[in-house]
Image 1: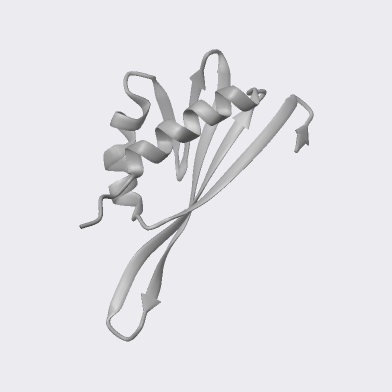
Image 2: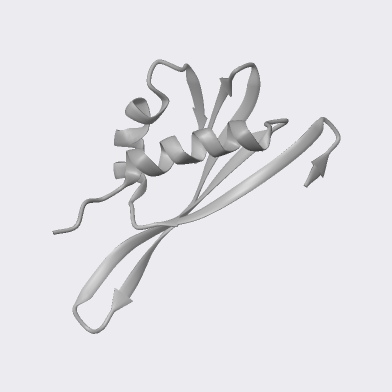
Amino acid sequence: MQTGQGQLTVVKKEMGITHKDFYAELPTLLDKIPYQQTDDTISCQLNGKKMEIVLGPEKVREIGRSVRLPMTLVMLRFHDFSEEEMGDFVRHFNLRFMKGGG
């Protein structure tokens, strides 16, 4: 997706998480990288390039009659990142939010 300021690539992820739980994990995800939060958008600089995480509205996914799971659409917006840079961050993101089964 092109913008007036260069290349913008958006990665969308449907996640089984509430906003509260996402924000609780955010400092670990970004480690010591400073970030700004405005409403449901988190902005930061990675290697001198702008990256945004945008949380969609919280929803509930019902499975059968008794199972209700949280669901949030999360958009990772990369400005002028190479494929390799995006891939590195998405892998890191996935590892941070991976839930173990049992």
